[in-house]
Image 1: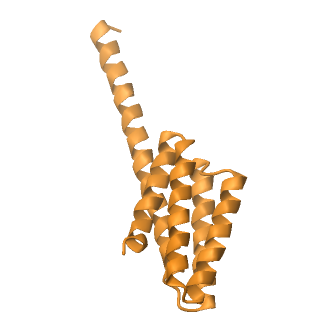
Image 2: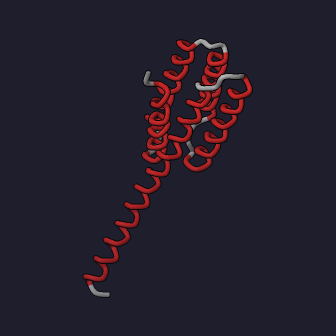
Image 3: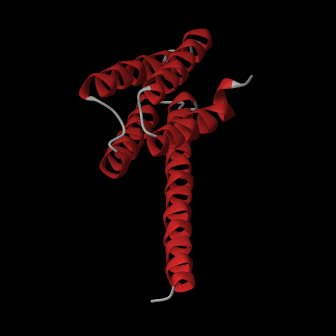
Length: 138
């Protein structure tokens, strides 16, 4: 192979690696946003049944993200579960201020968990915070 062919091949491989990394980060952010929106659905529930169905959706999104991106530790998951339970309870009891605080805690958790993550997982947590923005900005 000539020197120019080797250079072209190396540049092509680098471009593919760079683009696949960007694509994975974009997909992670999009998937994270779905989780944030699912959490907002918990906040917007009117009944215990709706809240439970929304929590179930959140759990499915969490499982999906963890399968794809090694998204969190067991301790992180336990904290999220506790915060979701609080959010569902406060929403059903029509305690808007407490529910808003629960969302703030979930947002803070997403930010703190992302600090210890790789770039792709950070992008997913950024997506979570973006999805939460729909129900935390009031």
